Figure 1 (tube, rainbow, N blue to C red):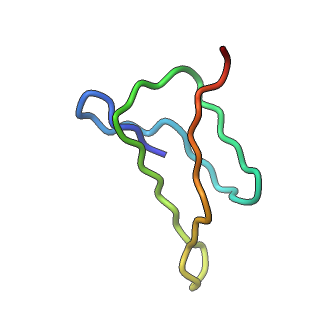
Figure 2: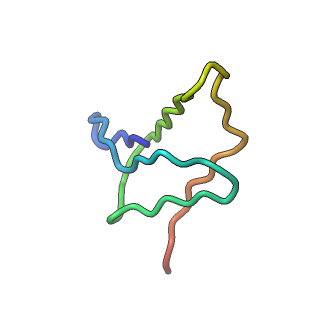
Length: 59
């Protein structure tokens, strides 16, 4: 996942697993105007993404 902060795209999380209820925790707060997710398939089938949710944790 990449975040656009102040006009600069930065990788904020990455992984090789995907599945139901997959959570990625970031190492710290990220202030961004946009998020980008790159999904790459390991086989010949096209990658798919059912849903994506970003939320603030804590309180």
